[in-house]
Length: 205
Image (cartoon, rainbow, N blue to C red; front, side, top):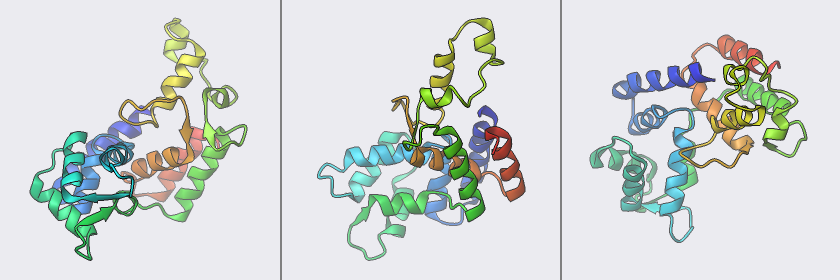
């Protein structure tokens, strides 16, 4: 899991200045923090949405970006905000904005992600937990397990943290979190065949 994440961060950083529009630039800034970077921004936006109407003013939007720690100027933030606020209402819908920010997945990649999730979700409840991992994830050759530094369950928990964002760790990974993670990884892979091979090797699809 470590290499795709590292490669994605490096790729995103290299692409920020080449972005075609404000949304793409903000997308790469989020992905420079890892595949879960966009979802992390989503959590911050929801905190700033005090009245829970799923809408943010520009001030709330910009404050959320600053709180998340992205290196975005007020001018860049305004360009991103205006790009979504096409009707000039002075507010943006959080879900619509995040959908625009998320890298797109073609059908073949989305199908692979769904298959991988189903393989991991052994009890079919729509959430991956430590219990699900016990029958799927091979921990015997993990260096920390061999050395005795970590137990099987600790290794599983660490693995699940890969898909969770910015300290929000509950030991569970939803399908949305899993899909969003691989949408981020996908942004760094141009070749469908390579993405297919990576997913099949990782999850024995």
